[in-house]
Each structure stands twice: as C-alpha cells, then as structure tokens.
Image (cartoon, rainbow, N blue to C red; front, side):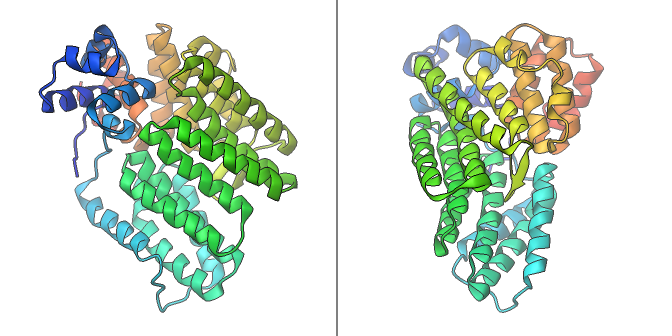
Length: 393
C-alpha cells in the first residue's frame, strides 16, 4: 500500500506520467481543458471531485484512486490487517460473550473517536469491537444486537472511505447490509443504503448512487413513521444532495440537488434540533453543512458563502467530523472567488478542529496545495499547516 503524501492534483500528474501520457493526451481523453489540467497539476487550481471523476474515466480509474489513498503509518499496518480479518470473519463468532452494556459502551467510544476524527484510536479499537459485536449478535440474536454490529461495520466503512481504501469500504458496507438483514430494522436498512451509496460516490458513479438513495427513501417512507422516518429520510437526502451536486449534467445536478435539499430541510424541520443516531448526525445544522458543500460542488461558491454570515455560530455544537469538512468547503469556495486569506483562515480552523483530518481529507490537501502555490512560502500559517498535513512547502 502506498504511503505517498502526494496531494490529489499532484497525484494526477504522477498517474499520467506512469502511463506515459502527455497533458494534451489526458486532457483530450477526459474532455478536461488542457489549461485547467496544467493548473491542477502544478497547484494553481484545486482538483474537484467532478474533474477527478472525468480524469479517472480516461485513465480507467475510480475517483478515489485519482484522489489517492491516504497513507498508512508503519505502526498502523498491523491494525489495518486486524480490521480486515475481523470483517472477513463475519460468520465466526468467538467464545467470549461480552454483556450488552459493554458493547454499547464500546460503540459510544468508537462514535466519539469518529466524531473527533481520531482515526488512530478508532483503528486501534475497531477490530476488537467488531469481533465482540459479532459474538454478541449471534448469542443474543435480537434486532438491537444485530443493529449494534451494523453500526460497528458502518464505522469501519467511515474509516475506510475517509482514507479511500475502497476495497475495504465495500466489504464493510456488504457486511453492514448483511447484519441489518438478520433482524428487520428499517432504520438500519436506510443507514446501510446511505453508506452503500457512499461507495458509489467515491467511485464517481453518482447516478447509480442516486438510484440507491431514491429507492431507500421510498422504502423508509413506507415502513417508518414519526421521528425515525424523518431521521431515515433526512440522512438519505443528505447523501442524495452530495451525489446530485456531482452529476456531470449541471442542469440535472441543480434539479436533483434542489429536490434533495427540500426534502432534507422538511425532515430536519420536523425534528428541530440535530440528533445523533447510530454514529450519524441529522438536523438543521448538518443539513446546512451539506447544502454548503453541494453549492460548492455545483460551482456556486458565492451561494455557498451566503448561506450564513457566521459560520462558527452555524456549526456550534456539531462534532469536528462535521465542523472541519465544512470549513474546508468554505475555504474551497473562498479560493474560487479569489479570497486567499479567507481560505487560509478557514483551512486553519478546519485542521485545528480535527488535526488528523489534515492527512486524509483530499480537498483540504488540495486547498492547501493551491494556497502554497499562491502565497509566499514564508507565511507562518502555511508552515504550521505544512507540518499538520505532511505536505512540504
């Protein structure tokens, strides 16, 4: 597994050169302008998910492969192997059965590490948690025990997807779907569908991802009621607006995004405050963060920045796993309108909120790489961010 610290745009250049292609050849095959490709490779423009998808198709790669896998530290390689083994042994329960309250406590701890983007601690505990939850589910055989196992798999999916380890992400989602199918859990099925659609998002196949989301929304609306229905429909629509914002056809993207935004906002209005469920957060605040990101993906940076005049207040109370990406998206929007200082400030805020995200978030790395290209290298904030991200100045 590569331990490269290349930011996504630089990774494009490496992938192109490995194929012996010229910039003109890649630009022609991907229908991306040569000028844009050149700027992306040298760091004058950020590589967006849509362009990464187009370049990936030309090279026979997924969007995640173009963005590049996040590196694995040497002392984490054995933990990653343990995680793969635990997921692979899905039908091999152990002999030691932990009580339900210990499983619940471990899930809570894992959720906290996830919210804090503490991937080091999460990778360390997940293999044991999955094995314990597997044994508990087989022994108890209740909807709650299988849902606990599904939540553990969902957390494994989150970890893998953040690092672009897509083979592991797909395996975790397959196990998650299997777990929720053992005992009927419509809310669990909705969450599993949301995660499955996320794998298509990372592969760059947004149309198929939207098909999965729309089918899951229909199922949730017919099988759930009350707050569980709002949670399921809302969580699915958040994924739907992200997928929609990255469709190739921008007119269709705007229509689909607007549809999912309306549905998510209606569901969040019913709930009132943001609510956490099985490791996910849904409500008005998280809906705003997704809407901001979608506006940026749609190429509407000013609309994104106009959603709130006080981003810190809008995000107050949300976990770092939501705060940091939102500040990164705000930084991306500011880059698009030429506000380099604002972009640098927002990127710094993001990485202070979730330092470990600096080494795994592709758009954060891209924003930083462009800022390095545009700013003087002596900027002290750039030096600080360089240490966090591992990207040299």
